[in-house]
Image (tube, rainbow, N blue to C red; front, side, top):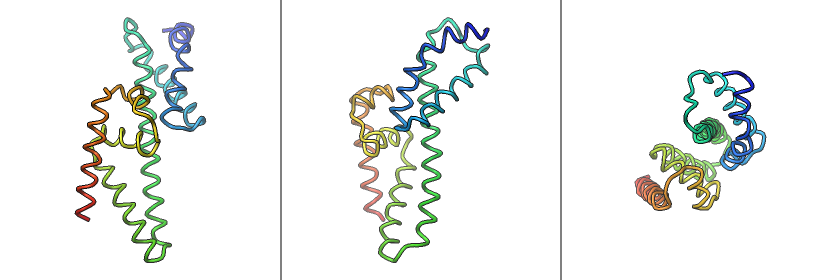
Length: 160
C-alpha cells in the first residue's frame, strides 16, 4: 500500500479516532498521542491489513484498545504512587489510605469488562449511552456488568 492510498483510506477517520480517544482518556494531549500511535501501527501493518473490509471498525477498535492500555499503565503508576504516599501519613490517614488501596486492588481483580464499565461509569462519570458507544456492549449487558462488579466489591469489602 502506498503512502497516498494509506492517506486516502485512513486519514478521513482522524476526527472520529480523536473523539473516541478523548472520550475515553479525557485528555487532549493523550488522545492525540493515542491517534498518532494507532496511525503508526496501521502504517507498520499496512501490507497485512485486509483492504476488502471496512477500515472504520478496525481503526476504532485499535484506538479503544490503545486507550485502555494507556489507562492501565496510568492506573499502575497511580497505585505505585499511592504505596509511596502511604509511608508519609498519620495512623488515621494510613487506615483510610489502606482502605482505598484495598478497594483499588479489588477493582483490579475484577474481570476486564467489569473493570472497564465500572471505571467509565463511576470514576469517569459517563452516561450509559456513552459507555455503549465506547465498549459496544448492550445497555442490558452494561447494567449486568455494573451490578456484578458492585456486588463483588461489596462482598470483598465486607470480608476486610
